[in-house]
Image (cartoon, rainbow, N blue to C red; front, side):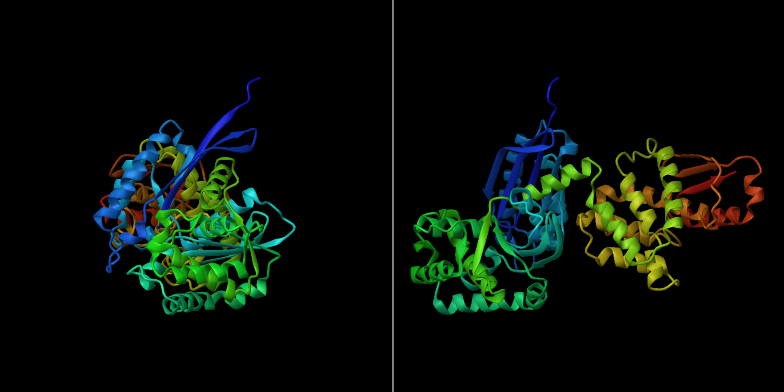
Length: 495
């Protein structure tokens, strides 16, 4: 019997470099078959108004086009691409992402800083697994620095700080000149960023420390090239390296073995951040991991495809934290899925049932704040919370569905979503609203079988004979709902 092999790919559109990893999964084991990396320096393309300039955008698009050629034959479901800090910040990010999706051939999800930290922790655990010890993970990217503490594959504490090797170098070493005064200012600025998490992280504690990604790998390589027998980075070696970087006087003079010329312009900023991390958290020795965000993406993607989706656990945790009526939420979910299955083909809703399930389970989350306008409270909570596993677009969609599951469907809320998913979001919202209306009485008795059909502007619900006559309140609720839907040019008929 032939061994089944599945191929997966993960793309990390970072602030400094773009990475891609391709892997075969054979009998549950991951075999990395290809790695690609290009220094794009996307963060350097942000102007003072946080708009991505054409030059940086073009470099990124050309890189993504090359990546896209490599993964063209891989099944779409087996590919995941994410963007990090620069794409979180860029005010013209939506415009760029449309072009980027075309170049890569796959959509690019922008993830939050804490989700990035979680995935980095997962990637490091992939190649350095040990569930017996608590570990601290630090990753210095181009535009942000992620930290996480956890055990095994689970990061219990995650944080993202707005400092990376690119923006720190732009801020303190813009001319290329490196002096002791500038280095100390850079370190102090990084210490200020770390100040907000220092006590919390030290209190959590750790048994081991791992660093990852370009800056830390380059620092390790330079130290190793100097004859160090250590496998990682020590405080003494890092201090000596910092002094040598200052002595060089300019990034163009950083002719160090182990340091790629392309990284030299942002090396001083990265060294300053790592020195601050060692100083703030009293680190003496750090291990270094070759794995990082892209490997974490692979593991997370495989989990989703094998029904081990961390987003399901996130929703379950929210239900427990906000004391949601699980019985009622479950009945709304069941009705919503029933409606979805009847309308999936006519409304082109393939692969959207999970978003609908989660929204149904969380539609009453706002009751934890107040009953009055609880749908607005719920939308706000989901918009602004850190939701492990969710991309920014997924989180905005979830917030929209909960915000608009009752009363008026606010057009301004729909505008928070990208243009290409607005129609889908509106249709999922209508399904959720119908499910909520049909369960408004909170009855434990199951709903009757009903038939639901729809086209672009018309919805028809057919109930068993006499059922509506026996349930006049439901009929009244459907009349009210028809009035709300009429405002978005949708006709609801029922009999």
